Length: 245
Image 1 (cartoon, rainbow, N blue to C red):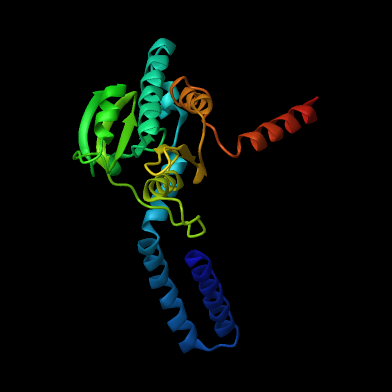
Image 2: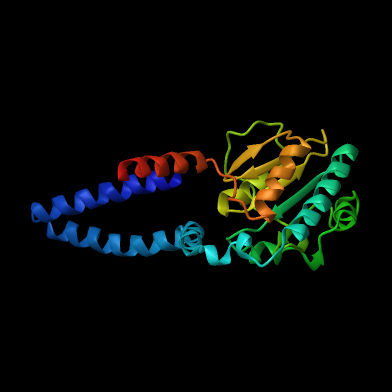
């Protein structure tokens, strides 16, 4: 909304600037031209976070994707089992949890807000991190390159103000993280014990263990990351294949 209003204002100023030139209003044209020059610099400063995210998106290469890391399926399956065991236990006990899986977009700034661990992924460690009244239980765990990079991390909350009132802070933080990167967020609700995950700024609530395993398999075994655009991409690809025939 803020960007839309600013764009309207810029377009209006550009139109007035051009009209002042056509009608030879030199003083007004000079003022508006100088204002635009300063204004573009101000826009760069104002939208610095958005520009940085755009550059990160452009700079994503398959070379740096999680699926390209040298790994074997047996190790991946072991990690999936450890995470599933931990999430199932936390869900049964209604212990809140938030795990963020780093994919192509680096999350160094988020990792720096927490406690660095660089630990192997185990169900026991994950459960202990999220036990209530422990130092790290309120923050998020960041998983990078098949290891727990950090715990107790602080995440940006979603900008979406259309969400239901019953969506808690953990879910809003997971959404905020997936709006700003290609990361995937896994959440356990401490009120209901429901398991949810967030991807591409969308929240999928109250999933079953079977669906959780599929999501984890797509992360760790190297299948294509689940996305709301995958079906559309497949249809477009099929269309062009048919055109070639």
